[in-house]
Length: 395
Image (cartoon, rainbow, N blue to C red):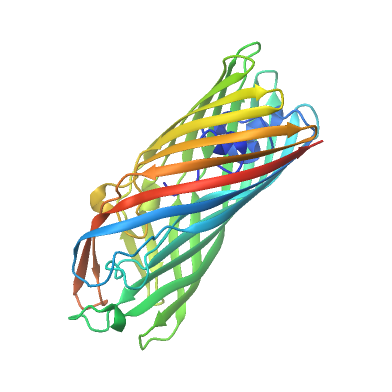
């Protein structure tokens, strides 16, 4: 799904996000569950991580009205940094600041793609700047609050035919919503329950929806139209997350996590190309996610993380579109951590295998003409890889 459930840290990336609701390891708790900040042992902790997103998204066309090609590898290549700092004001109160990815989605099919009248390129990205507090409510409960400023950028482009009766990419024009951006608030509430002398830890996280109203430029290429100001409005959904940790032995810890993301809130959106707003409905639905993970101590200063997760698709095949071709996903993850006195380093990999991502989309080739083009098929290769590394310094 468009959310990125794990961030560039060992417990998050290495467990496919299964450890997120009960994360008490490091300052990244300010993003995953701010209640976990209250359990960090060190007074000061700095964590810097980075992921590289590389993807294979190759569409095979079964039916197409327009000529052209299949779009090649439409998958993105992105560098995704994250930085977290926490400070303990007392044994019960911790504060944290952080920068981390909030969400992302994109594809670039090229201008000769058979489905170009639907989408040439889509690129949605959100980065969160987080300020968080975690507080112990006695010996067993802790609570946390995070307030984030989410910076969202959006780029969308599609072809417009100048010869509607002869659909040739060489004679097409192009319209691009470019450099659209916006700042939006988001709040995260977290609770954590750790019974005395018990191997169990329970975590709950609620994130509010993010109301996004981006604006920027509308650029036309190969068309007798001047540039204009454009905008788009949509909501990134609220979510509910529940996690459980079990300390099986001194060496082994197990994680279970599930969450619900209310993608029905993302379904309705509005786009304005400078001529007035137009409303759309993606027909998306709420979806669920399930994850399992493990932490194993190889030695006193070495730790191994493993995890897997399953994400339901928020959209049925008949409603899937080229700009957001998400489908159900299976994720496999692992990470290795080595500690050296007051710092540690880690490296890992998360691989997401998506289902076929069937698309059958009809688009008007030239606005107002009623002439349409249909493109139908599926992704023959659809996976994403997130190699990552991090360094943590505590004092």
